[in-house]
Length: 253
Ligand code: SF4
Ligand code: SF4
Image (cartoon, rainbow, N blue to C red; front, top):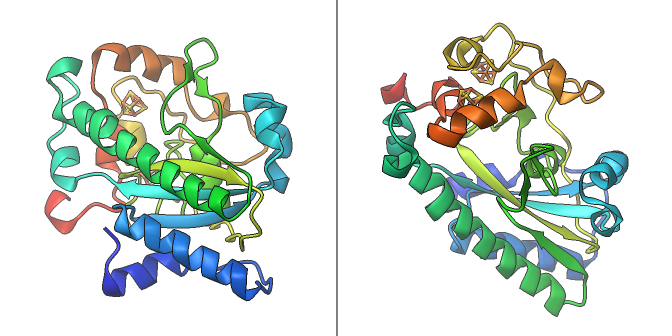
């Protein structure tokens, strides 16, 4: 949850230098309040112009007509991430239950509330589902929530291809609401993993090449998506989430 002092820290990301009208400022404040009241931990706004080609290639023209996105993040339970065991059965996994049956639906609900507020104000909006639909041939969804979160300034893309947030590392799930509302976008964080190799060493399928993210490189240069996907058909793996030192509490290190 976003509360008091921490709320201020998480919501004050650097933004583009654009003056908003009083109406726009009030809308942003209302949206942030909705997110905090609905159990969200991170809130950001993105300008999608720099990613238009990528968005069209992934989800088609119907998604590309929105110039901005709102990115919402919900933190995973540290206790559940820390005890996750990739060797147990998927159906027995508390980790899998937590990620897909608890946090993911909560994010969809949150996106629906944001969508409702934007629509009531007369703006177009599109709540992209937090998880499905997923193309098991191309191994991707209709839109990259990671892209929106990155462009919002909520984190950087690590060697694990996960979004690494300063507050929680990769222990966060995201959902996106596309919109034409005139919100003030954040500025992407320019950080890197540096010498860390924790996820690369720990991954049971050795799916990571260890290469730092560069937007111009195809994902294959960093990540064997198929190897991870096939392994996770039978294993509730979140090792790359659990092992990343960014966002780990002192107790779990
Ligand atoms: S989920 Fe598991 S198999 Fe997939 S990349 Fe992460 S550590 Fe590797
Ligand atoms: S474990 Fe290390 S290398 Fe992997 S994403 Fe986290 S910081 Fe980057």
